[in-house]
Length: 324
Ligand SMILES: NC(=O)c1ccc[n+]([C@@H]2O[C@H](COP(=O)([O-])OP(=O)(O)OC[C@H]3O[C@@H](n4cnc5c(N)ncnc54)[C@H](OP(=O)(O)O)[C@@H]3O)[C@@H](O)[C@H]2O)c1
Image (cartoon, rainbow, N blue to C red):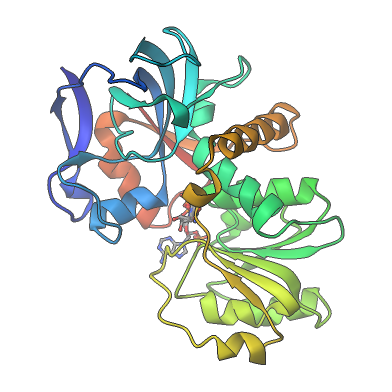
């Protein structure tokens, strides 16, 4: 027996139940993990509410780090005792122990703790593909990052700053503005008080930005398009305020032949070679000190519901981690 946080039905944070589960032995190609730390991500809220369907009942969570306890037949890349991390389906990270396919794991460098890994694997590999592949940020670019003090946001700001970009970021409070600024955001904008389109126009002297990274969704999507220079890119990668409604692509023409993409980490990490190279690049920027993983709060695994409440109430900054 082992403990996990599961949902039996979709709903609010109260749907999260801390309970005993049976953990099977690892099947062929699988690994049994004892988890030291588990990442909390906004996608966990979408699974909990049913916005993204999950098979019920299920343990939530897509990100964790721990030690290999046992391996199934055919696993050659990992051995019991290895420290590993992951940020992918199958869902089920909110657990003390779990089985997971070996080909979705990466080995953790000695200098990166399990808690740090749980705070950065999913958000950090997301920052990697957004900045390095979806739109390849160049020195001299000006970019806009929404929710710049959030989990993905703080990583995007630091990494883009490191790449030589000028970073404009939206934030929900003066404290978040200070935090974003301390993490590479040159121009924080308080988007609950100020018109962020006007602010971006002023900062860029009417030119606009090369790319917008928008995880806020319905509240910011349309106005974000007014921040982009002709031939620039709109990257809509999340929906914390609600799903973006169906969209007339003619608007992209009218606003300057813009590119629009709705990417997911799962597509970018689908091939194991990509997963490994993305994780390696993330470990490199973290080990070099260019990007710091800000874990603003840890919670006992049993208190996952409180982590969800805090995340949804916009009370958090950086990454949240559950400790089994
Ligand atoms: N597509 C992908 O591959 C991918 C991968 C990872 C994450 N994501 C997405 O990226 C986003 C960020 O994820 P995260 O885990 O790092 O979370 P997060 O950014 O820390 O999310 C919380 C923050 O979102 C902002 N927010 C704006 N409007 C909100 C609203 N109506 N309700 C709640 N929060 C609101 C708040 O910041 P302010 O107070 O500053 O507004 C809040 O503190 C999520 O949408 C997630 O699904 C996508």
